[in-house]
Image 1 (cartoon, rainbow, N blue to C red):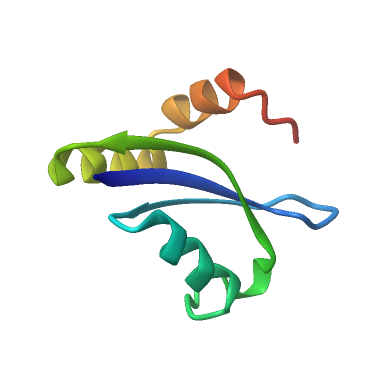
Image 2: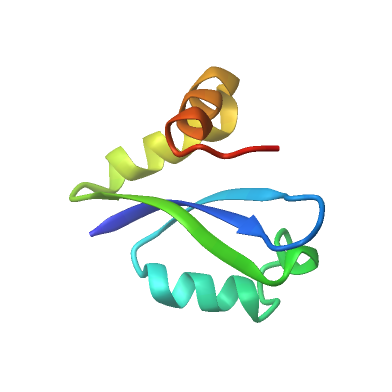
Length: 84
């Protein structure tokens, strides 16, 4: 399985991170251990959403679309009730 996921910081001003992985548990551990430079300053991260895909290409495509298209990210935030 391949996963597209959304992480959120537990800080006063929330930050979000959208990612892709074939090993979701290990990937989150790596984010929270500071091994990823792009998420190092947001530690600790909390998994708030994920989608599972059988095909890697579908998961990578979804991740790319969420990162590049504001309307898709907004629709997802509305669907999972993320407040800013």
